[in-house]
Image (cartoon, rainbow, N blue to C red; front, side, top):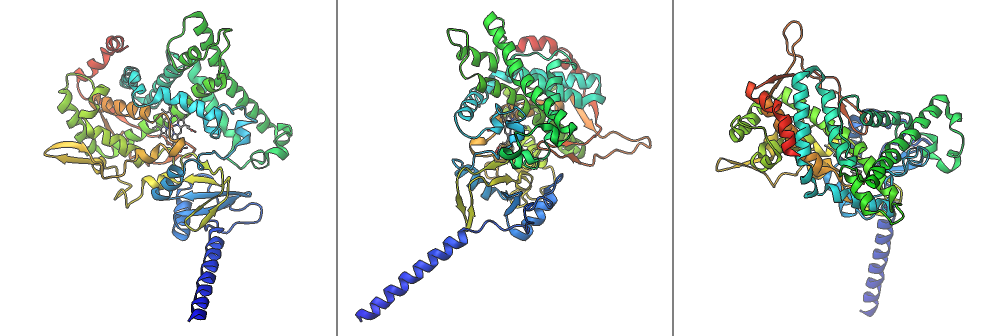
Length: 520
Ligand code: HEM
């Protein structure tokens, strides 16, 4: 009896030992993915422009977490909300680095930008500063400004509808430059707007992240003169560096001089300079201050502009939804006034339209990649430190199990009508839980963005009927819903007809200049 027990105990111990080893071995497995080539890895298969289709193919073959290698860099592409939330949200403490882009940060001079820094002193300070100015209650102090610029956009569009996309860009810039620096955008030739647009364009020379030899082997080739990569590259990098300086130090110094002279218009920069001013007139935490202000424009303008254009596309393609939204707006405003952000809770249908716009056309289709600060295991997979994590936001926001008929624009999916009263549903996943990213890296400007989109959509619906342009034969021109891909994607050229819904609506806009004063 004793020896049987003994043998049984050995068998159990042996089983546990081998089971543990086999699980450990299994956990050393990187997630499956397409077969890599030596050195290049999957670089040649990695889609340079529209990754959506390729990612969908890989997901079908390998599952919702796909493993890739790009020149030795391990990458995972995450295709479900469950996996993204588990890794980037719940394990945020180790999934919040950014893949290092030496070309942009170190050699391009953009190392002050929070989007390029890893959690640490500079990151914490910049997140704290941004949160101080963009948390839910702080953004309320910008409601008047946002409303004013939404009306300005619509007023400019009423006067010259052919340039509706320019007006969107300029008035969005006006919002953000005012918040960041107290700078008032006077007209379309504003030097600050041009400067920042030049900076955005200059990034073209950097190419897709992680593909230039300086990004792949920073310590080996980074110190070599830019000339060896060609004249175009070398000239392009000089512009990137010049823009980094002009976007950060130049406006910062200007505001600092204004603070010292007592002439600064209150803004994120002026307040932070005042709060960090030392008796000898130097400023503590300078880099975090100019970094926070510069990144607000870089991250906030393009994204908001593209979301507003996507809303216009939805209104062109779904006229019944436009009519329905207008009925709700008219029911509240009775054609007597324009909407304000105080009306937000009374118009849940417009809130649902904001959510559906962010879901229907995810304008940051792959989010911003995170990276792992230490080894981890997930399911049976081993994920080494420095693995890049791409969350396929377009896939997450168009998941048919969360959002049936995901290609359709249907704000109704977020609406409940309780005894005839509309309210937002709480049992459907809110696209805002994904569209603004995850964990410690979640977009700090999300409340500001939501307010800007809401007031712009509500005012557009109050003032205009938005409809398709017609060709010479009188047939409607349907937009093809093609987007120019990039970190932020934008709809390609499309046309829109804006017809004022009433003379009174226009006159409300025209009297807006008085209203602006009242709002300020
Ligand atoms: C519709 C508008 C917007 C969308 C869809 C959007 C989306 C995003 C996304 C997906 C990220 C990446 C988060 C992550 O890494 O997981 C991000 C980061 C960021 N966003 Fe936004 N954003 C918008 C507007 C804004 C605005 C208005 C501001 C500024 C006021 C802003 C400031 C930032 C900053 C500074 C980051 C970098 C955060 C970091 O690296 O830690 N965004 N945004």
